[in-house]
Amino acid sequence: MPSDIRLAFAHPEERAEATAPAAPRDRISVRDLVIDADIGAFQQERGRTQRLRFNVVVEVRPPPAPLDDDVDRILSYDVITEAVHAELAAERLNLLETLAERVAERVLAAPAAMRAFVRIEKLDRGPGALGVEIVRARAETPARTVGADGLDNALHPVVAYLDNTSIHGGRLAGLLDALQATGLPVVLAVGLPDGARPVSAVAPAQRRIDLLAIEQNAWVLAGQDARCVVVSSRTEIDWAMKHGQMVVWAPSKIVLDSPDGPRGPVRDAVALALWLAEHLAADRLVVHGSATAPAGSRVPVLRA
Image (spheres, rainbow, N blue to C red):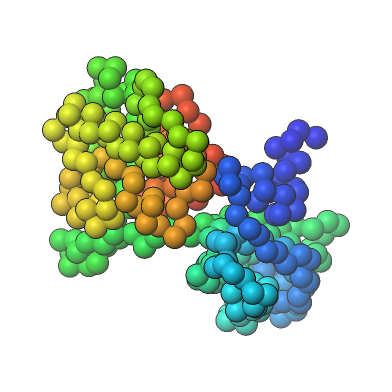
């Protein structure tokens, strides 16, 4: 069986591991939780219970040190089981997809939960197990603005990664025109500039060196087109999106200040851009260049 098909039917723990970043998070899981429930869209499913099997894996941020063997410092398994029971008790549902979505949303409300894999299977509808599986990640609350209709509307930007060829290859104006034509706010992200940069044997120092090098490249991009304004804070990004201004992300402040900043090497520029897209609850990430984005995000990734 090809590896991608095998992985599709593997336990959510294996899928979580396969789609983890370079520095994977800790995980907790509940396996093979079987509960009788009244669920289903077909008439023959109404008014009777059937067995549902739940497998849930939650990636969590590291607990504060020292742990001191204190249960209050970790995400409890009860968060998962209580989410399942609470959503089953809330109302009768037709779709497993709806139930999985609500369980994931409830689990991700816990401050330590960062990504949830939820698999739910019906055990009594046929000769095998019929089910769904979803993956949901925590994303920051999107920026909001009051529209012409007077309603409070969420802003979901396009985040675009531009490689160095896109910046210097003579096609930049056309690329920016196409991004603006989407009608959505645009946030640009870049990677390391070409050429040598300082090297440190100390990992935190190298991380800051790489972040500063990316910011230098952001200023190079800004110098190529007057529409590109370099910003470094979430407040600046939100203001720019509300006022229709295209911006280039200087990553140091947000990355270093975030309690759940990207844990892999920041020189992986597309992974860094994907993290920003999740952080902003973006509509999509558009990748210009040959680099590939890591799997496991709920933000759609498109190649230009």
